[in-house]
Length: 102
Image (cartoon, rainbow, N blue to C red; front, side):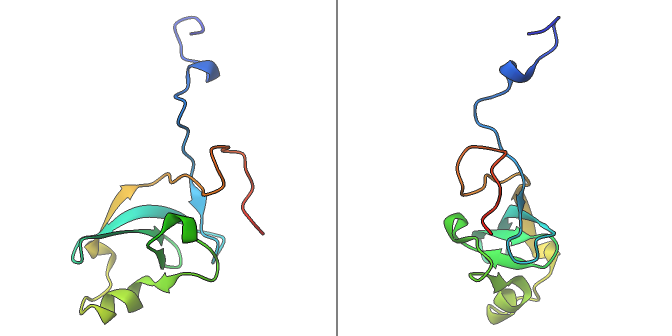
């Protein structure tokens, strides 16, 4: 502690950071629960790209959220999504300064 205030060395060992969508390269990827289907996945807030395996989050391996939900008889609205985690660890390891794969 530095004068009673926490400093960088006092930070928790498990550091999390936001994952940027590899498809649109603009939105943040959230860990979510699709409430109507009781499934957990990873969803981009911007383009609605959806993945079910964090290790598979890549530009060419997503499904479109609305299309997926409609294929299960649901309207595909964000009201059917519960955000579980806004800061998701990147699959690249524990270095929060790591750059995304190109």
